[in-house]
Image (cartoon, rainbow, N blue to C red):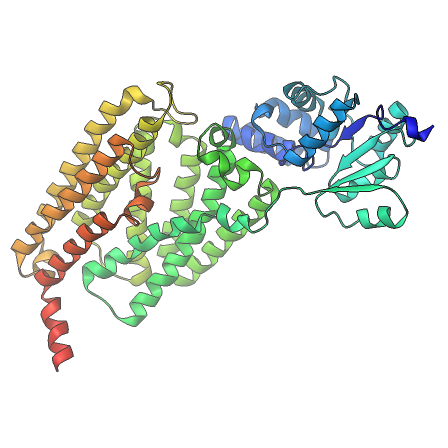
Length: 484
């Protein structure tokens, strides 16, 4: 009799971490946080003791596109095989029923689903009871991925274990047929989710040190420590930003490969890593100085507001980006104890306002249609306006550089004033080049990361530094000290 079952025995799939390389509860939480943050946070806090009710409320608050969510391709291969054999493929999940039904329709699976309702959490023994009641003892194959699934595997004909769940070894020892499938997760990509390649942006903390010509080892070490704190703070926000942007990233030709969007890293693991990075950043900042801590907290608050709302507001988003870069310079001043001229900050802000426009120019230029970009307020028709604002930013930056040269600080630091004026040539060349490349769509989606890898641009910046050192007489001082 058992030999007649295989072709007709239904294949039952868990959803979170099994059929999907993500978790519907966390997906709806982050979608809700982006769409209705106050109600979502309230639901999360009040629903901790009512999992079924929490899942139902979040499913209503966080509208998600289940058809975009990453599927485990090896599990999908098993689904195709089961269909070819004429077997029913059924989803059975502790996630909310509305979402599970939606997911089943997306992939053409059975209309019969087993899932949580607003009053019943279908997990562990509850799921086992429902499946045995529907298919009988040993009347189904079940695919799951975690310890709670042991309650279902023991009643299934065959256990399909996705990932390396240790409890499955007991099933094998008991003689239960076990099939193992890789979960496609990559723990090492947690570091990638923190975007360490973006930490190079925090070299901006060295601007006050360079401007003051203070190269004492103690100053450098304090600035390096501040850079580490800022990098960790930025990483915590990158995690939040990526989790809020899951749907937009999955619609993007490149960003869909990001760790959370692709399912390579579990959302829960990312949340843990982001929280740890943020807490460590605050501890380092607290050790450095209260002022530096204040800048870090302001940066994180403004970044969070940007991720939640401001990045979808035209022009405001670019101003916020410029402010976040300017805060790095302020943070460098507080970390090292150096004074920063207001003119220098006023030069930096419009320069980064220009780069913010370049970032959006690149995105809209590379867009496939004239529609507004997912999660952004711009589309191809905005290229002209973005170009105009970028040019205004270039002009404002150059004017403020020129005005800075007349300040008492500049006169004291750079006696050969005309060389500071000469710096305007490579600075103009660099800024105009960045705008031109962005308008043509010929750079990375992050202009700062592009600039730090662009050999020609780096060459122009080195010319600026050489002229500044010459204007300050530092070359003569260093040459004299070497000869002496």
